[in-house]
Image (cartoon, rainbow, N blue to C red; front, top):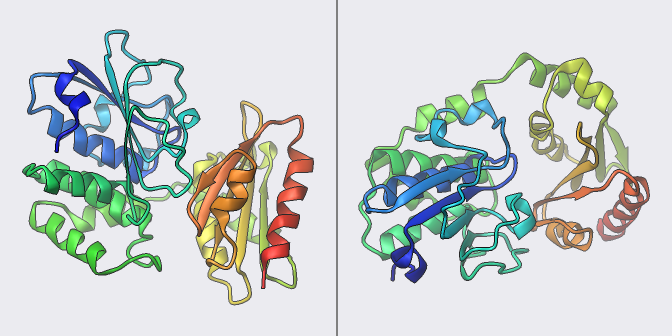
Amino acid sequence: MPSNLIESSQHIVLIAHKNPDADSLGSACAFYSYLLRSQKKVTLFCVTSEINPNLAFLPWFDKVTDRFPESADCMISFDCGSFARLGITREIPLINIDHHISNDFYGSENIIDTSAISTTEVVYDYFVANGVKINGKMALSLYAGLVDDSKCFSAPECNAKTFAMAQSLLEQGSDHAMCIEWLYRRRSLASLRIRGLLFKQMKLLADGKLAVCEVSLSLLEETGASAAECKSVLDEVLGMRSVQAAILKVELPKGGTKLSLRTDGTVDASKIMKHFGGGGHVSRAGTFLKQDNYNELVENIMVMITKELV
């Protein structure tokens, strides 16, 4: 059934998480297309002012604003495991749509499916269950999130439902070639520079089972890369024969450190990151550490990972 909050609200804000990926923003864009059919006012919001330009192919990308509207009477968050990921302080009714196993059910209504490979799958199921006609823009938005979170259909979580959804969205107007071009082939010079340096400086611990990549502020400045452009290295590192877990530590320009953890399933990344205020999935998770105590915490995290490696 359609959400009661959606039915009763007049101005709905659709929220993608900080530094959004294709799953979060794609889900929000698909829902934006859907709600435009109603007589309600709709705003696409993300607290990040400079969103990854590789997501510019998504429908309604130019409608995203970092200014939260005062007249809003309902919010819908997409792919956000915790309220903090929204980057806001407003307290109005909230619908929480997500697939993270670490989600803490912070919404007034929670539409959570931890078996879904992406939040766009959760949104797709919502549309199907409520008889919503999916147009080309919605199909492209949903497909982008599916491609991104399934690692271009290479993730072990892919199943028959994943490919059935992909087929359906392609039949309804999505563009596979466009998604692959923008998400995987359009790389900046800065991202290539940081990638090479990270491979060169990478450390292998625990008999080669744990790979560690560190990005300092000076390295970001030297290459011109953003923190988001560093993460793609993790999946490649995890492909090494001996590596069961790969962690990336990035110093952020505004202070603090972002940790991203990828595993082959041997280590529960979500469990470890949640212990330090973050969250995610079994095979990928992350957290933010404040600048004043991150060195000690990083060491603790390394110890926890090492103990669980086979």
